[in-house]
Amino acid sequence: MSVSSAGHFAPPTTLHPISKPDGTPDTGTVFLSAAVDHPRLDVGDYTYASAFDPPEDWCARLAPYLFDFSPERLVIGKFCQIADGVTFITASANHRFDGISSYPFAIFDCGVKQGRPSLPGPGRDTVIGNDVWFGQGVRILPGAEIGNGVIIGAGAVVGGKIADYTIVAGNPARPIRQRFPALQVAQLKRIAWWDWPIETVLAHEKQIMEADVAALAAVAPQSPP
Image (cartoon, rainbow, N blue to C red):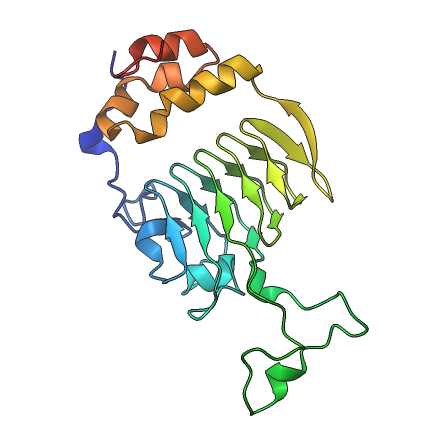
């Protein structure tokens, strides 16, 4: 049974999808794909970011080391929720730390920079799954791989690979618990509700928000075996 209508749900191209009581846009929250245009940043539909002091450049606020010329990418899935103060520290922030000095001499030299020994090689992409909740002040380290449905506690510093549907917190972030048993996680990945048309998502909001994986599977457009 539908509890909402896609006709009243802001399309993913909406810059400010929330309105204040007086009808004016709430500029502190954006659908991120509508707010950024960056060659090294890919953002899925309906992922939003919030800030109490909204920036003019949302990409620079969220990923300050992701430059147009960066070799790495930042990839964020659909329906992610990014709270105030979250920062993605991408690989272009790195220094070499495998030798005597970590100082980036080439940055301050007007000569050729490419291939200089004081610069690190290209780093890994940072890849975020779908439906990930980033608490206030979270820091994501270069090359992190965060699975679908992960919840990250406020102030956590997250690196490495985080499995689907894990709750993590702390510095460095540590798993607190799995949100669902392994078999249900596998089923949720097959269901992939975030890839449904928004009309279908809203029609089954109740099943998506509750913890009954079997009930969600039963209403999936193509229910897994």
